[in-house]
Length: 178
Image (tube, rainbow, N blue to C red; front, side, top):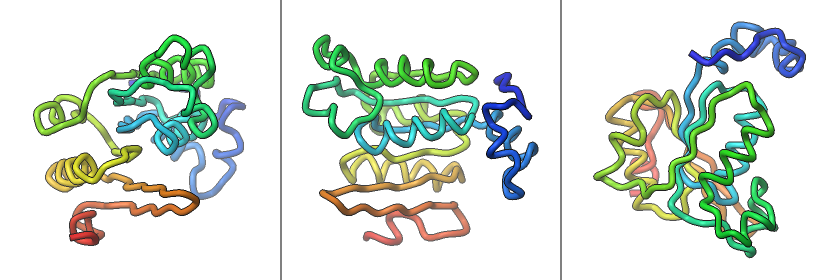
């Protein structure tokens, strides 16, 4: 279990909300979120989850930081791009600096049918930061089978779409798009 102090000043603004409170913050501290894709959407999701005190974050991305990423991918720096740093590793380093009270693990790998079981194991929630439907359907199918909540997100240009999926309670991604 991650040791994130509850009722700490860092989280006091969340704890005073009746919808969260100390109990909710304790649940966040014990949670494990897996974010697949550390680009524009995934890096923003990861930053917000780290700041909220989600106790364990796993970041999965096979890509490397490029200079063209810097205007929209909030966790990366010029130095990351110049060194061609893997996005998952750069994001891990940035999130460790943002919130050293949580555990962040960056994994430089491709999520596919052969790696999904090992990479997604133990997650309490899955977050989509990917840029292709093949991977999104893989996330969907895993989440539905394992009954794990997941959040689909997609951005094109200036528009976007979010679909939270609660297996057994809400329609899944395939239900909506196929």
